[in-house]
Length: 152
Image (cartoon, rainbow, N blue to C red):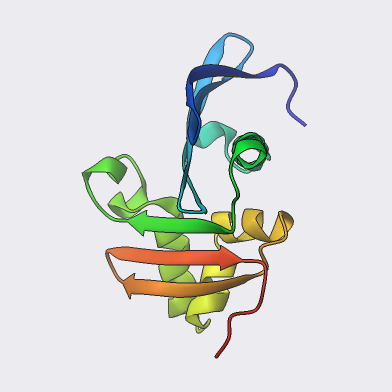
């Protein structure tokens, strides 16, 4: 666990919340979470030097739990893109999209590729062990992580 990790609330509504993430007095990231029609959506940015330290999952879980207290969350939605919003990221793609496409390139199925992204690993930690890939191309992937195996 990272010492002195703080979350400073930026806004809160019934179905959304956002925080700046700080260590000490230094801002190292931001998280926003929304619930729309039972789907939990999140946008997380953690500075590169603080990634892979558990901060992203800590923030994800915090926002998920807060929103789950006042909303019924039936799925975690991953909406991953390549556009201006991600110009600062490697290849101009969200981390999840880049990892997903690499997993596909390595021979994984769409579902296994999604489950092995950062969001997929976090969803599984929260009990959302299955997924359905609803849109899949090199610029955009839409996936829903669910608790029950989808019917085929």
